[in-house]
Length: 149
Image (cartoon, rainbow, N blue to C red; front, side, top):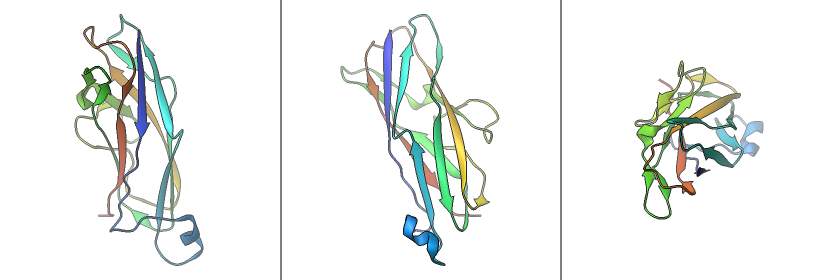
């Protein structure tokens, strides 16, 4: 069996402004993005399964007092400490904005441009192969806020 673990990192950019909770009380535009949980254990993949749906969803909480563009998600390789890896092409994400699971070979829009606060629930899927070494894999997911169009 394979144990997959991914660590989340957050890259947030909106015209060079990063949001802070204190900004909520002022007229200064802000966008703040957080995830629950901070670290996500992708669980254990079975030796005989080609794809593995992660049992826990990741929730992205967006707090904003202004219009922002789409939120994009991308990933690094999931690396095994003994040298194996799972490429971004084999990691998939699904949200209401994606209309099903989409490969993360390229950044994926997980929300549309919007104003105000909202939550996005991400479902993840990993494609495993017989030759992938068993054990723990680590990687980073990046969330990027695009400017409004």
